[in-house]
Amino acid sequence: MKSVGGKSEFIVKSSEVDLHGQATVPALVSYLQEAAWDNTATLGISLYDLLEQGLTWVLQRLRLEMFRYPKHRDSVTIETWASGRERVFLHRDFRIYSSEGELLGQATSVWLVMDVVKRQMVSVPEFISAVEIAPGKEPLPFAKGKLPVLQEVRHEQQMPVRWHDIDMNRHVTNTRYLQWALEALPVELLEQQELKEMDIIFRAESGFIDTILSAAGEATEDETVFLHRLSSTTTAKELVQAKSTWQSRAAT
Image: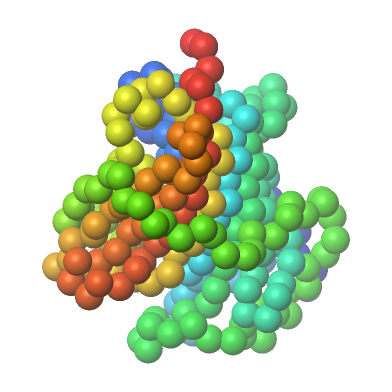
């Protein structure tokens, strides 16, 4: 069976915008994940299909680039397609369009398959690898390579893991990790700047009875690039590594 791309439409809700009325980054990433779910369901390899085999999808890396943010009540269309495979790493791309067809943003992602009982990554099973990745849209550059390590922590914040932070995989959902990484930054930055690019690597899982330490620091002298690290205060394990690039907020 050859893979096919998919399109999913979303309306930006009032609960998904910031104080400027623009869709938040976690909200947009949740759209990407929902679009991926829709497309994998069409291909017979959705999360539910994997759970029947004792497996689940796990997002390992996401690189997002935004050109313009949609606002409250705007309609957006997410196009997504499987863009490649490298050993156990499955790549999926996304493009975000306005209702007028304007390209608002794009993203590339890396996914793994996990055994839900052993909590270990496994080789790509045959029923997934049997879905042949058909050439179609030009793939975005794969998200690969190391990110710079955060050396000097300038901002820190602790976040206890709550009930609503847990997803169907019984660990903290990745959009919450993304939110926590950004919330460690100064309010002045969040008010005056907007996220241009985000490259985030999900290294380990966490769950209930844990507190997450979100740390960040400037990566360049012009203070437009930040490095991030999320770690568990219970195990001291590094959970997330990320790099964010910022630009002046567009006039409204």
